[in-house]
Length: 153
Image (cartoon, rainbow, N blue to C red):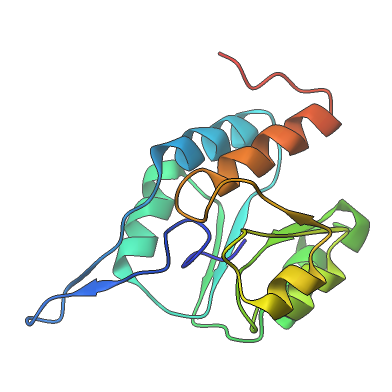
């Protein structure tokens, strides 16, 4: 999945000293942590390199984090090949033009409702919840249901 606009609301706060901050939803974090515990592969692919993204990924133990890649399709295809995962087994969540090809390529492409029109058009599914406000959790629960997994403790 993409990060900014999907795991966050898309805003980045940059202070005068150059430090940045982002807000991540704990709803999404818990959903991702529970998918990981059930053996579902999780990866983040971001067009920007960000210390805040790295910190959150480490906290959630996200095993595959790719930053600074604007060709999201190539990054997703390389990762899928590395992990021996078919496109039909992939779901990709993104919200912008640089995500659209990856959304379209994945077996299940997803966009949050406030995604750019090209991302929404490429998606098989548009979440009810907004990016940074539970969109990822919604998809986590759908993945779990499709696989017959219980995400409850």
